[in-house]
Image (cartoon, rainbow, N blue to C red):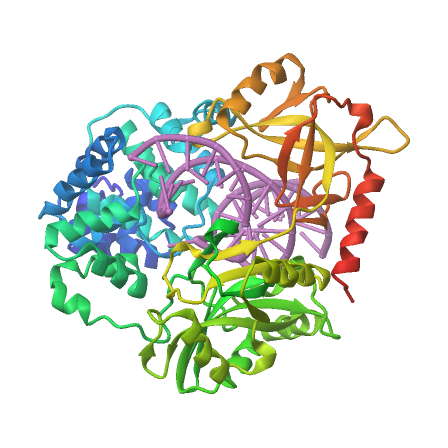
Length: 596
DNA sequence: TGTGTCTGCCCC
DNA sequence: ATTCTGC
DNA sequence: GCAGAATGGGCAGACACA
């Protein structure tokens, strides 16, 4: 009589040659990764790695990287961090692109679709701890990396850099939430507390090490003996990871990288207006309430990029058509895309989002939206024309080319101003015509990629203010863990003694926040996972950029870009503004912004 | 099938 | 988007 | 002065779940 026993993993490896082949065979025979993981007591993440053809290249332990992270976190000065990074980049047992991505905390350019929700689930699954306790720890520590390191049990470090790196890179292939949860929880189960801290932070795209990408750039520049400015420029043109990994090729090769249409460039940004920073004559243009768009055209090819470099041409076909009308062989044009009604009046920003947020749409849906929300553009700069880079040219000269290339109806309207009086005259006219404000530009300034400069200044009006009351204080995260960091505000009902919420405000100095917290705790009347509810008695004057209709708040209105101007200790809850005033303010803005 | 939650180097 | 903060 | 880190409003899409 022979005893029949199921084949062990060892048997199967012998039969199929490698564990990778075994996994492939089992998947083809209809087993799920979960089945295999359970049957052979193998971590789920490893099964997924083998399914994707994972081949370990180096045996460097991930714990060697977490030690570097720990040292970087401890170092205060920029110079110290740079030296530590330099040491890390000198390691020869890891490839440069892996090191660069580990240093930047960005393992892949694809969306991981992992946020706090999934991390919480994975931590519960990995440790058996109740969600409530995980959430409580999150309130205390303000960040899931630290929470993970609290919850994961110490063990001998055995994860390799390769495993962790590849395990993160394959996450976009895991479509279902439960697959991602299993994947991450198995990774965390096999990690030490320190490893768990940094795995979670890598997954959330935030290492919290307090250095800038500029520091990474200069460390690499130093190591390979190339000018940091050159490396920065190359990175601005071809992307950060791509640029930094080119450093070993040397200065000559780096200098060959040229701007070309089709390759996103980080746009220049503006500061808030300061009269002392304007040099006249200045170029002053309307500021349209839309979305930034960088138009690339070469021959019959067009690419559109949002402010952060997301490609948008498939959902904005009318802008592609406009670009085809540009009088150029090739060009890169900087503009604002805005939503307009059938009569050409500006539509509120909310409408535009229905067009600019989606990355792709079924043709029928796109057609429908194109009918509902029409688009146009207002161009204000040109960075490249027919093979020539215009960045270093003064704005005054770039504009000459812009006017030749872009038809007048698609140009941002503006004037050259000789002095502040003319500037203010134009600004007031802009407000009267329903614009968001104006941008003031130095006519002699070059276009500085990815920088916020004082050569571009934006002026926006102070809107009305609303007196409202704090009804809830919300816990802070990250470095504000353990503190309150924002407030839920409410206005009165005109008749009844009821309060209606209108939105949240934050961005108060730490000192103010600290002095308020004891007061808030004294008037606490309840709590939930986000924060504490308080007796409505702290009154504040709040301003905003726009009032929007919403289902999110009980008043039916929300403030866009809200901010506290001052606390009104002279006012009581009975004296704050009511919902009627909010409604009046809401309707008033459409006298300025006519909507069809 | 409808509603709710989460995520997005989203857009501002 | 805005604001604060540390370098 | 700068960039990073905290925070606000919105929307769509993709799942999860009932």
